[in-house]
Picture 1: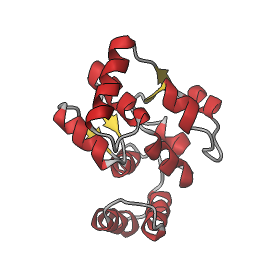
Picture 2: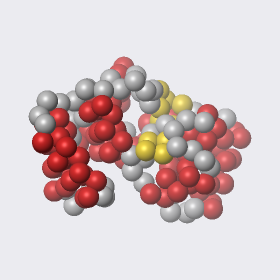
Picture 3: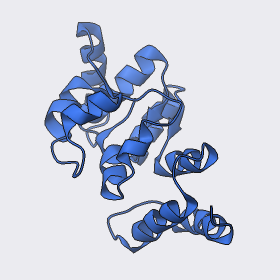
Amino acid sequence: MSDASILIELAKWSLLKALFKLPFEFAVPDALYEDELIDLGEVDREQLKGLGLRVESLDAEGMARAVSYQRARPKLTLHDCLAVTLAVTNDWPLLTGDKRMRALADEEHIEAHGALWVIDHFDEHRIVRKSTLAKALRGMLDDPRTRLPHAEINKRLALFTAKQD
């Protein structure tokens, strides 16, 4: 289960198509798909489904749970809460860049990962060249909107630039 932030971050660095080459399935809530995945650059929404993105919906009980999460944590959006609810309901890991969503996932005993986890798997599964990953990581370091830990980015940069492909 993913939120929009990870997909947007990967799209920014032209890594979105590579996500679907990983040996995992990825899904988003239907409302998030319709409302937030509008402009992803080189990949449009319909292409995402063609690449393998699943669009999932919640039943009435799930919607009630998502609303309950949002009432208890007003800084989370409804879309955030829908993603967490789908992860909890289906016992799926959560892919998010949002620390509040991670905290809720932790409370609910749901595994949560972020963009660096994806980058690690791109390398582990040899889906993206180390030089391409290093370029994306440098861009993330230079982007003031990227909230990833610089120490973790630098650790990977050292690894990816020490041994090129």
